[in-house]
Structure formats: structure tokens, C-alpha cells
Length: 506
Image (tube, rainbow, N blue to C red):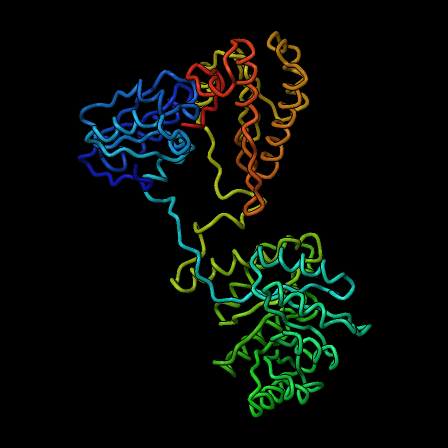
């Protein structure tokens, strides 16, 4: 089945298939789609509570599609089930081949149907980038060689292209060559960050290919190194000294890149940005580097936005390398953030478009967009639930707790739980249920506090830091149901009468 959304016209008849609890939400999305394209539509509600539990074998027994349908959109979770079903999917695939309609699986959340069909959920190719990430291991000689290699391997996995060995300015490291050679043996490109001539020589001899940094103090020594260097001014605001160093390196055919030195806020940050612009104007073809750690490490703010903005400046100024580190806790994921940012800014500058709606990996504190349930959908869920399993919805400063004959609302999880315990339905709240509800309501409360989307049984979205959660509620329901019925849990979990569900899943 095609994974891309269908191409709809006014002549189309789109048939949406879903479970009972998501019927209202799917009809709302279907109406929006039909209105936009001027096409016909229908919604088929199969006899199952939660469409996420539909198996290919089960759906083959309930396959009823209007003859006039030109397109059939199945629940998104079915795509995963088809891949896992193997030979059991054959009956359904046979029915799909026999129909004249185009059949595809939609998004896993039915509230994404309109955006998916209209192309607003597009997968953008962000593989290209043009900025090298140099990740510094600060005070590397204070660590063991093994630990430095371990850190370097993790930095590379996060997106670093080169490992910068940061030396200790107060003490010469006699074994710096051991560090560099170990990193080179592990497949890393290495730079050495020192003004000590002996450390520099040992590092180059054992495989370092870039020296940070060169000024009037050591530029003459660079003639003997035979590797690329980073040219810096003697003091940050002295561009005349930088000009002299550039002239010397050029005259002696020493490869170099230029770093005008980015300074922290409060120490001339804006002027240092202007210096970068001036250097680019003076030397339009020279390679440049920006040390962005001076801002991320020395500013009390989460680093993702700062890294993105600085990478955007680098992209527009054709600064093709950045030096970063991740020592302070709020910048602990800087390398990964830079890797994401460099792809976004490359796409934006290359196409002349804002870096918006491309990726949500750097949208970490809040979410890209909230997708509240309509009042009708919540009411339909509350009226449709016939079992004692609990559903949670958190939106518009309110937590909804729903079960058979129960619909509680509130903002404080403690008060909501206390109210639940005063109701007859609380008889089924054992220790495991209480723990589960407490965990989920804590997530719901965080979502309301930060303005994030809450989805029961799913992790809150933290951009590239998101850690997916297991579906504990469905697993727990199936396990308890299997004990009551004597049916093995792996079979019970796929049974269409499983009462557990989530109205947002189509």
C-alpha cells in the first residue's frame, strides 16, 4: 500500500475506516478534507473499540468498502501490524488487491488526517549540510586516554566531525601524543587546542590535522607543522593583528581558517558578531570558524535556540566550521543540537525560505502545535466508554478522567484522584492502577504547565531528547483480561473486543 497521502479531486470518494471511540474525531477530520477538495466521503466504523488494536486477519473478516470509493484510508497503526503479521496478512492484502480503490494507511493520530492528506505534513530531506562541527573535550589530559576516546565516540555519534583535544594551559601534558594517536586509531579527525609548542608538535606528529590557534605568538612556528591552523587576532578586537597573521600564513602557504573570536554577552558580543561580518567582507573566500561555546556555556539559557541562531549566522556568512563543547548542564546536548541546526539552516539558506515546519527536533520545551480534542469528541468518548479502564485527556488547563459512567475534570492531579476515590468506580483502583494514574496525571500536569500536547500512554515530546514509552495501559489491560478469560495475553491483545482505548487513535 502506498505510504504517501492520496491525490484527491472533486471526483474522489474517500472512505475512512476507524474504531468506535475515534468515530467522532475521524468524522470531523473527514468533513474538513471533503470540504477542502469538494469530494465525497464516508466513514466506516468497524466493531472494535480501538482501531490501534486492529489486526490484518481480523480486518479481513470485516472488510466492507463502498463500491463507489476511489480511496480507502486505513488506521495508521495497521501499517505496523501488516509488517509484523507476515503470512497472516495475506487475506487482507488479497482483498486490497481486488478492490478498485486506492488503499493506504493514514497517520497514527486521526487528528493529523487533514494535514496528512493536504500535504502539510511533509518529510523534508535534511541530509545536506555545509558546517563542520568541532567538538572540544575540555582539559582532556585530566582524563584517561580510554575515557577521552569513549567521550569522542559519543560526540561523533551525536554529529561531531572532528574532536578537539583541549589541553590544560596551566600544565604541559607529556603524553599528549598518546591521546591523539588513540583518537586517530579510533577513526577520529583531531585538532589540538594549545599554545604550547611541544604539545603542538607531539600532537601533529601523532596525527592531529588542525591546530587551535595561531596568532603573532606562534605563527612563525606554524611553518614547520605541515598542517592547517586557525588564525585568531592577538586580542579579540585587534583585527590589524589578525590581518598580519593572515598575511604571514598566506605568504608561507600554510592552510588556515579564521576565527575572529565570538565573545560572551556583556563582554562585547554584538561587536564580535560585527567583526565576523567585517572579516567576511575583507576576505570573501577565506575559510572561517566560529567558537560558539563562549555563548552557550556562558549564558543561563537552554542551549538549543542559541546554537540554532549561531549556526544560522554561520550559514549566511559562509562560516563552515564551529567549535563547541558541552560542559555546562544546560548545554549538555549541544553537539546534537548543532547537527540538527546545521541541516535546517542549510536547507533554509539554500532555498531562501524560513526554517519553519521542517523538523520539530529542536522544539523541546513546548510543542510545535497543540491538537485539542473537540468538546463533541470528548463527550462522545465519555458516553462511549463501557469499561472501567481510565482514559486521560489534558487540554485547555483541564485534566479529564474518563471511565464507564465517570467523567471527572480538574487541574490538580491530587484533588482529581481524591475525587475519584470517593466514587463507586474506585473499587477497581488497586496499587498498580493508582501508580499508573499517578504517573500519567503527572505527565498531564507537566503538559498543561508547559503548553505541551498530552497523549495518554505516550511520552511527552521533547524534540530530539524524546524517549518513547511502552504502551503500559494496553499491555496491562490485556494481561488482566487474559487472566479473567483464560486466553493467552498475546492473543487477547489482538482481540477486537478489548475494551481499552484512546479516542485520538484512528
